[in-house]
Length: 307
Image (cartoon, rainbow, N blue to C red):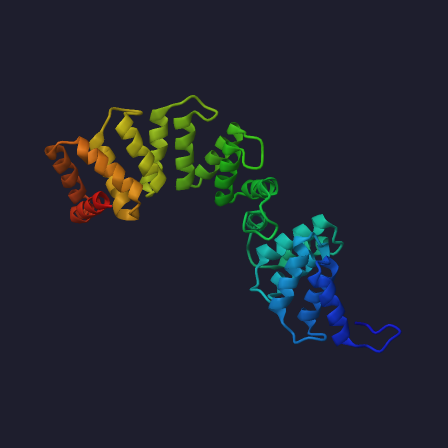
């Protein structure tokens, strides 16, 4: 591109860089990004530049990661996004970029309000199945934990799931419960459901269906479908109290009308079949008191029976 010792010919330089980039060379891919960002030898195309940077970054190229951070910082080829800028500068620093440290300081000091936890969450997503770096559960877990430690409720819930189920890390039920409890501090319905699961299944604590019910109920009040379903299951089994088919029907009815999942319709139909006509009428009266259109419920039950 510089024409050292030969006449400068940007077009030929682009051809050579493109050939190397297409063959998978990350330095050439980063160079193609720079070419498209500057328009030297090609029509300027910032979006294409970002795409080339991403291809190089996928292979661990520190310069491309730094250039992606700069693109997000300035809004070149992508919308301005301070968290993504910080994320890419962080990755660039870890990959060995000497310019990333100063860029991180600048991004933190002079931009709009945001948190590093947002950036770490973005990085974690890069290691998902559909992420830029592919499915790497252990790396994803590391970044989710950093985001959780920064106070992000989404990350705290995901980190709880990671530890409770050993996704990319050794299973650690105590850590899993801890992150459920942290998210519960901000009244997150998912955390309430998580703690219900902890006490129902006995994850790092003795099984306690009554405490489990109390957490599920808090989640259900925020219309958490999984918690409503769990309470209905417990009502059928008599967990944490007496068996209560009417209450179970109420729960499944709410799910059926809100979500129309066939499994819930079938569960409700099975419960209705176990009840006498008078008991089912009590369910309908209770639903009517909640302003539920019971005709829609009957239509759903008939449709499920016909399939």
